Amino acid sequence: MKSYITIHMEENSFEQQIELLKNEYYTQNKRTVFFRKTQKQDCAKVIENRLSFDVLCDKTIYMNELEDLPRVYVDYKIFKSFAQDSNYDFILDKFRIVIDKCVSKYGVYEICADLGYLTITGAHRYYSFIRTFCTQFLHDTHVHKHLLQQVFLYNYPAIIPALKKLFYPFVPADVITKIVFV
View 1 (cartoon, rainbow, N blue to C red):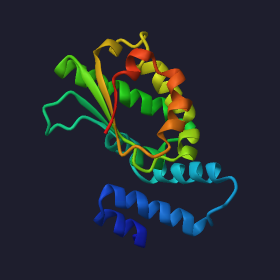
View 2: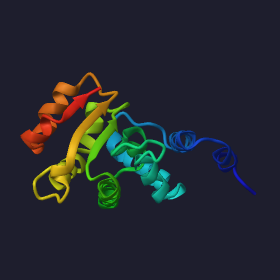
View 3: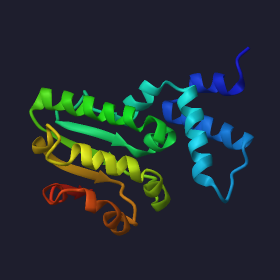
View 4: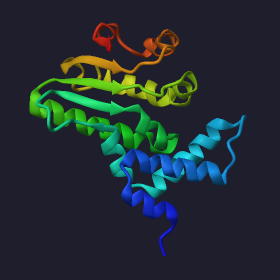
């Protein structure tokens, strides 16, 4: 017999499925004031276990096949629902695959990241991921770094000055000039 949550997940959009799982998790595990990072990681594990990891990655990092543009899209809202230390390498591999696909098709690429829902605590929670991403993909050692045209940051939070201080030390100066806040 299917549970209420399973039946509703089949009827809802992917983002709604994530919200249902988060709500179920926090119904069973009272939200804590302290140790929220651990609780959010536990919730991310539940979401990763209940939904397909490949689909989560595909919905987080993708090319829009309906557009004929060299863009790699990143959806932070979905990323934050399942990303955790134990799966960072797999998520980075997904980035690599999508960038390679974009470069193969267009010869260049842009990154378009929707940062809606990003907070300073979220930035700290994903600090090691962001630092690793910057060092692996934005430095001269990356095979396609010279093909990066622009980085568009959409729905960026008001705390962007604090985030710049936190992350710009990992971003090469020539890439900083390519960042556009939209």
